[in-house]
Length: 461
Image 1 (cartoon, one colour):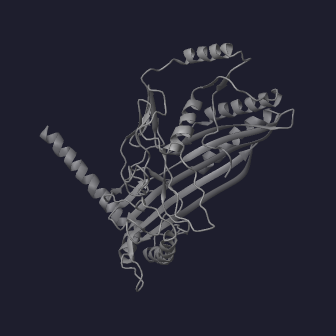
Image 2 (cartoon, rainbow, N blue to C red; image 1 turned 120 degrees about the horizontal axis):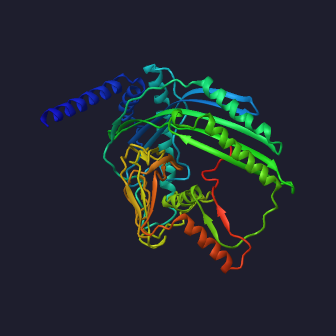
Image 3 (cartoon, one colour; image 1 turned 120 degrees about the vertical axis):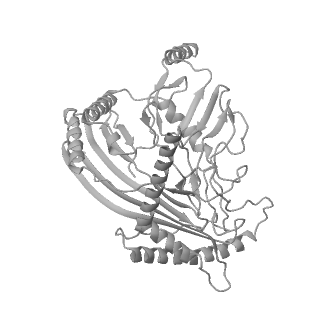
């Protein structure tokens, strides 16, 4: 046993040394760290100095191809580094964020690993971000003198620094393979004359998320995403456009379906669109509906997942209101929102489920907070919200759910892997029997069986 423990300790030590060496050799991470140290000394005479500085960079490569009816419509390779610079002046209680004029600095960084060039770009962006922060902070302090808010929340919560530096390195895409696959799958639609437009879009992406801040956090983690989208559209007899789509997503291209499965998906899309062109026009419906399979998961993600994040309205100025999409669950903490037999956990630590990789897994959020599983619904009662470091009513500290860039200098919370369980599950066959029973009881001609929703949206950006 002692020998095994020595091997484990030696392996852990070797891995730690390797990661430390990789971090030291990473020119981008070095440039961010060195420029951050210099930026800590920023201050204009008689003006507020930064109390928090954050550099975040998405270092990425991508390849995309779009094919239709056997022809390549477009093809593109890209390499980019997208920075987000956040400078906070003031204090945790009151700073320049959460104001209608608040924002983060962006731009572009050199893609070459030239230390001086990278530091120069970061310096320029930081200088602009600091000057803007000072100006916005003054405007915000002037704005808050015009209203009384006795329950004002802090603008930023404290969190321990996170150090998570994982191995990084891009792998070359086999572009010819994916071009040929897109071309081959797109030929399927040539056999369906009712399909008036169709496309096979493949987007492959590799990205490493970098983040350093003045609290001591240092992060470099993979954030890869690839997808294939097969779309088709036709024209119904009444002139309306009918559409269908098949979407496949994976962290790495090797996890995407092969050509045979993609062809089968294209056939299903084409046949469904063809059937829709001949279908009778729909009518207004009020009656029993059963969400089956993927549609049930999409329904939970759309209705529950989206509302687990509680946005915070910013300080505004007269004549410039800031519209904020409120959570429908705001103010309902510890209230019943689902049947008693339902429980829901948001778990970003899960990497796979029944052998299938999960895209919701992540090591650390955008604010440098390491997440843990979070029970959001217990026996039907809402027990927690998804929180970032921007305090909201009933949630003053982060639980590591800052997953998206947000408005007004903040980050936005989002679900990871939403695990829904029931202590009284009902077999699918029984659910269909109950649907038909309700249809008969309510004297309807039919019930609706929904197998797929357009969530997340498949519309072109």
